[in-house]
Length: 487
Ligand SMILES: NC(=O)C1=CN([C@@H]2O[C@H](COP(=O)(O)OP(=O)(O)OC[C@H]3O[C@@H](n4cnc5c(N)ncnc54)[C@H](O)[C@@H]3O)[C@@H](O)[C@H]2O)C=CC1
Image (cartoon, rainbow, N blue to C red; front, side):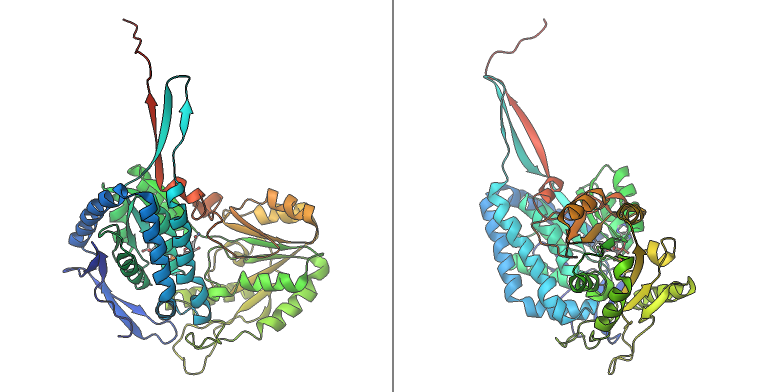
């Protein structure tokens, strides 16, 4: 098997195999070929990970923050040195084209480790003058954090959770998605190579039941999930029962609003990035593209022309723009939405079904698809598809489009295209979304907090904001005088 890891789990600084875990396979989505077989974590693996994390966390939290930062920055360097190898692995596990994984996956993980590595020595408390007596605060770790990953950006998600958790002095146990179990193990290896004490970062495999067991485990202080809204609700409810701190990065149905004064060519580029990158499997995608009536037909014909030049094909060929969907299940789901859109009466501008790619007859390829004349109440405009399906809705008035853009249970992201600077800020100010773009879309630099309003999430990843979700403040009052008592 092309990508078989040394063992299923990574615990206490080395690989570990479960004795009784259930085996499951990882597939290359372009061919359906099994590339690795791993086992779910059994109770012995879970307890070994908890015990290793407990020991590792004590050592790690006692290290000077600057030293912790150096280790994270070293891990960033290792990810960069191994970027090609990691990108090929990510392409095999996800089907995303190498063209993308070379720049957006381990590379984004390295940026994240470098960013938090740089912050390490700056995470201080404050001094509070009480007039003689005083108080000070310390920022302390939470303990053992449990990360749960989705399948669309496996190593990136692993790094986005680990870097802020670790810089605050926590240990982490990470469970990748069962669909993409491989790259988190390589990330764990890189951390060990960088000098991370054993047990500070552990990877265990499994499905939702392993996730739920960990969420309820008394030694887990915090849970951070990237996944769908239904899973988020389950994790939040279980975490709530056990009063665990929780960060949730969930799904979306985000609006991208294009006014008639926009630079149309740039707006089309943004709409492409907002819908077809990673074969549409991105949580922040701007899948409801509101285009002003005055430019709608011009926008659609040029969008269709540019979409027809997309190269679908071998994900390992760097000329390929669009790879297969991640799994048969996702393939069936996306095809069903392409049919639903047509049944609901949306106008199919291009695409609309599966795609045949030479040499990959078994691959989960679908055509990048554009629907026009989409109405707000259609399912393709309300439900997260997680595939390359772009819906164009037209509008004429600013207040109207803002109200329609906000008419969703989600609130992950939003974008506005206009040359009118006041309108841009006015509209963004009214949009109910946690991550917004003006005159671009889907750029997520580590410096910028990322997360959702409404049902799209709780908490933030990245930026200084993430520190708040992986640390706790201890306040200490220091008495400089005597103690008065009533009797
Ligand atoms: N907001 C964000 O940052 C992002 C959100 N996503 C969202 O992720 C979804 C796609 O990813 P999927 O892997 O299909 O999501 P999913 O919700 O099916 O699974 C996510 C993870 O949760 C685990 N899980 C499932 N049930 C669980 C339970 N009861 N307790 C604990 N863990 C459980 C799974 O094993 C997996 O590791 C989309 O909805 C997408 O929008 C994806 C990427 C980024």
